[in-house]
Length: 120
Image (cartoon, one colour):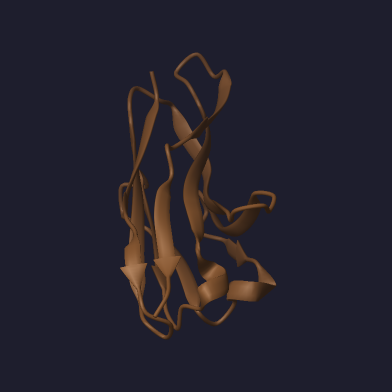
């Protein structure tokens, strides 16, 4: 069974920085992409940034130049470095993983979410 666990998050002042990470465990054949989404109160969940197995990345316009997504060498941990945080970045941040089991069936698994609050 695949599990996705996020860590990091917390409270930070506007202009500050925060890092969150996400680690995948379990028996899998491959990871195709890992992504960070966020959901603010009263708003729909939105894509923040995504990284593929080949290392290609994309991110929402609202975070370009401020957030950086990266992964470890083993490909099982993805990081989101968040700089120059704004109050509108306040949300629950979720990690999403797309991959395949050893029987080649695809999966999409989400973490439980981690709260990021930007406030003075």
